[in-house]
Length: 211
Image 1 (cartoon, rainbow, N blue to C red):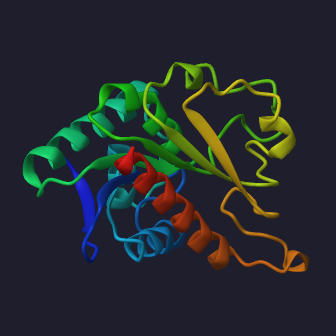
Image 2: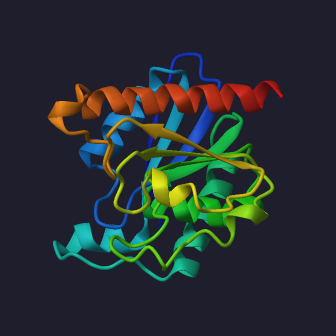
Image 3: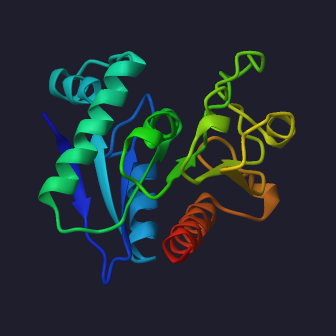
């Protein structure tokens, strides 16, 4: 039922349950690189695959994501399973793109200290009118979104027009796209931004643990 990868950290301060995006599972380079950078910040990471991704990998055929309620149920059930079976650590939840959105949708119903979204899908590319922000002002746990400045799912200019609520904050990565990759002319690199995202995440987590 559950397909997850626990990546332990030295002297961990917290555990981050981290969901993948719509098109690639926990094995994707971005997910593995982000997890490694988070572990270097003393954050234990649990990566997992949603059921549709498990089926896709088993059959070798791409599948679209399941409906939101099924994704939310799986996320919630896995969080409860980990809390019951793994050594206790403060729990944070999060995800890449779609996974980050699902994390924010379940955050009020999971015993977690906060949520992190990496490349939040504020709207489909090219459809800025179809926003996915209505639930954000209702969140009761702190949420940090880490976004590339030129993300086609929501860039700096787009996000400046949204009402995100008092518990949601956004950090931007210079010239980054939806996977934090900047243009060569920017003088930055994707790996640099992934490490920066992990450092911002650690600051968010440590800040909420001490508050």
